[in-house]
Image 1 (cartoon, one colour):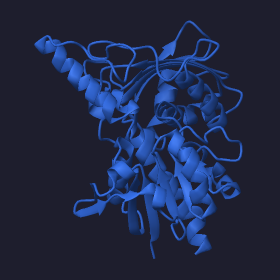
Image 2 (spheres, one colour; image 1 turned 90 degrees about the vertical axis):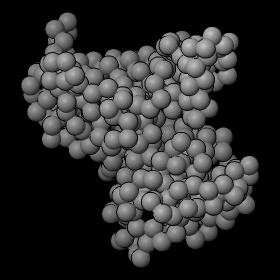
Image 3 (cartoon, one colour; image 1 turned 90 degrees about the horizontal axis):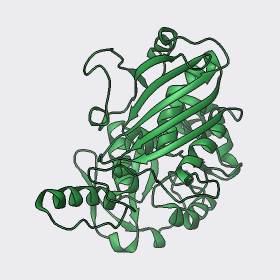
Image 4 (cartoon, one colour; image 1 turned 180 degrees about the vertical axis):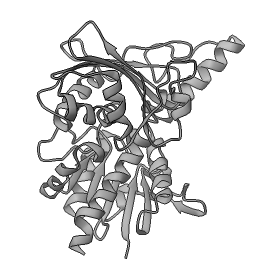
Length: 341
């Protein structure tokens, strides 16, 4: 017997990807409901190869009898509707930033801290981490276990899809405008994104960091280890899909490139593509549409003791959002829900 599942924010980039991923992975669903705001009611979204779902109004939906809710509607909407769904008995997996730092809500990356999943019972809510955090901790978890990471320095190169469809459209329209000599229109980004990079994601905080940079530090501590120190610079780049990260780690114990490479080759969710030759690494273009977290450019850092550099790339809509949410649902099914049934 399968579950009744509601996908909230079903018309957005991540919502559509969640529907596709549920179908691709044959998640045991007897019924899937697509929910969004009233302006999207009646629109059609695909579920698998043949099924078409008509979008229903989130505001009028009764979550009673719905087993799982996979939310990706934006933090403001989640703040209002996630507690309502959870109170109705629906287990919510929320992809927004709304509940990530709530101490009573587990923040889960299944390859990293699936053991923390049992905490969902407190509020019936599980948080999906930030996309840039997810891919980094998947790659760093096995290295932390082996070598004890104490400090991380990361620079991210994040695609426009991380800000939604309108941001992707802005990249497309600005690129076209450059070629035909039209005026550049800025709506989603503070500066031109076409043929440019913008070191500014989310709002600025009092210490000069952006909220995105703070998220990476705070979420890594909650997921991986509260003792880890992390500093980040998060940059938006003119790419449609796929986030890349240049990561430098400093460890407690001696670490070598060969040793790290061998550990990562056996790590769940990781694919090592690391050849010291032309094209011997992965870029966002190759990662788009793929599930793994790719690790390349593994090399020792001679400027610090026990230091290592890595290049980490993943599809931010898949492992950075939809796939991770579905993997959480699969872990719930495997560990808790089947037992309850």
